[in-house]
Every structure is written in C-alpha cells, then in structure tokens.
Amino acid sequence: MSIQEIRFFGDPVLTTPASPVVDFDKELRVLVKDLTETMLDAPGAGLAAPQIGVSLRVFVWDVDEALGHLINPVLDLSDELQDGEEGCLSFPELRYETPRAMRAVAKGFNMYGEPITVEGTEFLARALQHETDHLNGILFIDKLSADNRKLAMKEIRESEWFNLAAEKGQNIQVKDSPHTIFGRNT
Ligand code: ZN
Image (cartoon, rainbow, N blue to C red; front, top):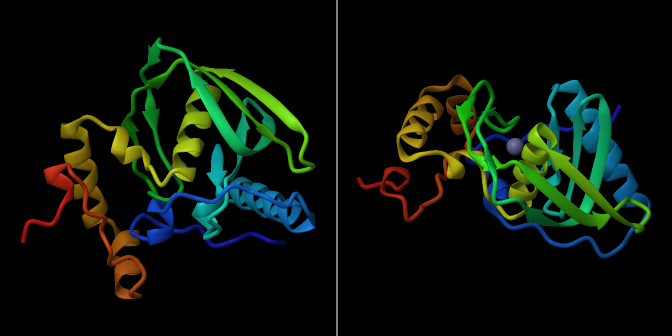
C-alpha cells in the first residue's frame, strides 16, 4: 500500500504553486498510483499532488466511476457557470456552495508523457477546476462568497483537525491575503 498522509489547510505546501513535471519516469507513475490509492482510501473525488506534500503539477480524479489523471494541465473554461456544493480532502467535513464554470476542457499529459485532452461538464468540470487550482496554490475557500468564506474560516478554526495539526506545530501558518477576513488583524 502506498497511501499517503493528506495535508490539511494551514500546511504551506497547499498554498505554494506547484512545479511542472519534466521527467515522465517511473517516479511519476508511482506518484500517480499513490495519489489514486490515497484518493480512493479517503475516499474523495479528486486529489492533487500538493495535498500529499508533493509540489508537482499532477492530479487524479474519480468521477462517475471513471478514474483519471492529468499532468501539467491547462484549462479552457465556459462562460456559463454552475452552482453546487464543494468540499476538499484538505478541509475535512467542510462543504460550501462554490461557483464554477459549467464546462472545462483540460489539456495536458498522461503519465507516459502522451498529450491528452479531457472534456467535462458539471461535476467533472468542477473537479478539473478544483484540482487545477490546487496546482496554483488556490483553495476552494478562495472561491467562496465573502459571507461563506467567513463561515468557512470560523468552521476551520473550530475544527478538531485544524487544532490538532496546530498542536503538532504543523498548521500554525495562516496565509495572509488581500481579503480582510482572511488576514490576521491582531
Ligand atoms: Zn481539494
């Protein structure tokens, strides 16, 4: 088994832009396998490499009973939007209404370095956007309305997982942001 520890919000790796994959080697294939096993074990609908502490542009998904993975993705999004709740394995138990594009076309590579295109609507489109954001150090709470973000931050601060991680000295860093409710004013 190569199930990895999932990093929670507060870990700096989650807010660091990930590097492009250069070598499509065995190590990369092991990473894709680890991500897939960790996602299925959680279980979750998607997982990006930074969430297991690897700052590379790789993610996997499990949507509509189909597993997929994508490396060095570039997204093209529809103007049409969708509503719906979203969660993230790095924020256990949080679910918030998160606006996303209805349709996404993702171009990238598979683990053998072959160019691939993935097109998705609705939930797959949502997953592709959520996971690509992870590679840019962007988290789903960054996409919430101001009111929901305020509620989310309160829920995070009160959550057992955030406080346990803080005790271990893992998650004490909260990213400063231009959004006032996200910054530390005191
Ligand atoms: Zn996530």
